[in-house]
Length: 356
Image (cartoon, rainbow, N blue to C red; front, side):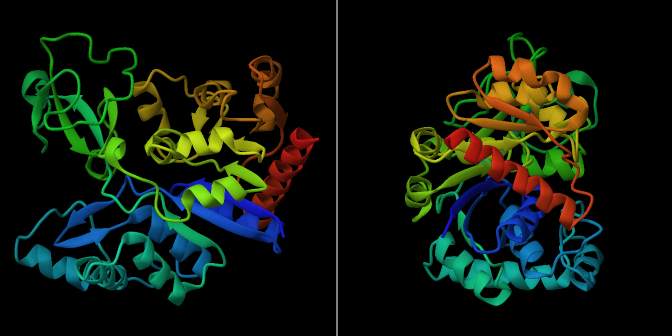
């Protein structure tokens, strides 16, 4: 049985996994889920990326949104608003709240996140083994200019000078152009969810900080899955705050690089723009061009063996291959499940080509 390991973020990763299951129905698929997006709100532990994978593969996702539950209601959100309890920018549906209550109670009882995730998946039967990247708390924060200095509307988060946010021990990713070079500019760290959901990435990101990643350890089964993999696939998830955060956990990047299995990625950027979301904002924060070859170079030949780009980026194939990564141009829009399965088949075929 073919063993496939997929480090994955939220919507893009989950939809790719659905296509991969169709393309390789007999394979044993292990998903290493990003937990850097996790956040504590209303006394609950919320794991957006783990839940998006679980709901998508288990048939409970809101298909149009790509996140949240199908047939959702929002009575709890409305009641919290009536009490004046915030934040109001992160709306939890009633069905979704039940998942977070179960998770929070199990964590409070002493179960690690990996065991909790396994228990939740027992209901949804996603058809993959879903592992959090770590049982330790890791939160992705975004460094932005302090609104008090720029005249922008006030946001939450501790004001800091340029460099790592106050109290953060994890190193910042390298800033991009306009990053933290001017010591007179004050910066503010906000949780990734606030930057992405509330602020809609409307202000420049100056750095991306996976807080706690440097002290985290891979969850049980993660390193073993990578060591035993026949193929490792990077789906078209956000390369900075999804896959990048997973790779920031000590031991995971090394395990991918040292794996005997071919590593093939699919570009999340088509024609110089992210397929979904605002990945260009966080790519700019670490100085990476929002292009298919730019993301390939960001991962590098030390990590990637193969890279798929969309047909509109076919002229970039020679550049990517000159960097030591085998590259092919194929359709990469996940317009439906069969189109996604075709992408997965191309990735697996490239893995075999690399292996040969």
